[in-house]
Image (cartoon, rainbow, N blue to C red; front, side):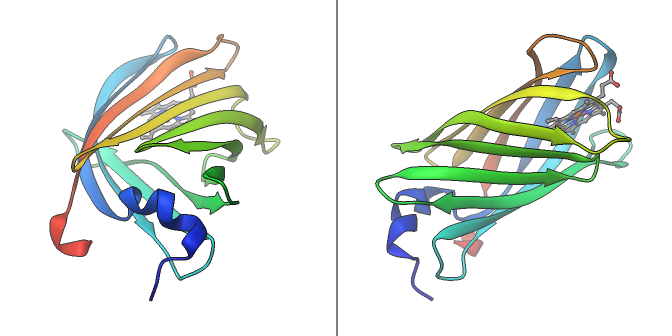
Length: 158
Ligand code: HEM
């Protein structure tokens, strides 16, 4: 199936990515995690995103999330994300080369979820390496680094 023309600037994300990350936050113990990410398409003007992680030492499932990168023309994008922890994020921004330049539009939490009031994400691909960072303002802390990971593209799924 052909990639939708509005998704052409996002083609560098397509495929399955696997790697390792480091998590930290002032209120929790630091941890290492393994991660698998996929970006797929169905010929419409968005990419489907799915992510799952597990603890690097114990193999125990950790965070997961899924969503869509919406291509809205002229290299502008919107990123819609949901998490089983009761958090949803909406970002808008643009594709700059092989980097997503994102600005948080809104973050909302379900009544029983932990409080999150700001999220800043960076996502960049260099050759076949995807690296990202996540910072958040949560549980009363100001915007503070939470995650950093580096993933390699699985070459046979492109
Ligand atoms: C690779 C993705 C992620 C991993 C592996 C991860 C992992 C963890 C772990 C292990 C903890 C500590 C134990 C726990 O409370 O469950 C934690 C806490 C937390 N994470 Fe993440 N997380 C990820 C992404 C996110 C994202 C995207 C958000 C919000 C936008 C988020 C929000 C939180 C919050 C609010 C806490 C609770 C902090 C506290 O209770 O003091 N996490 N995370």
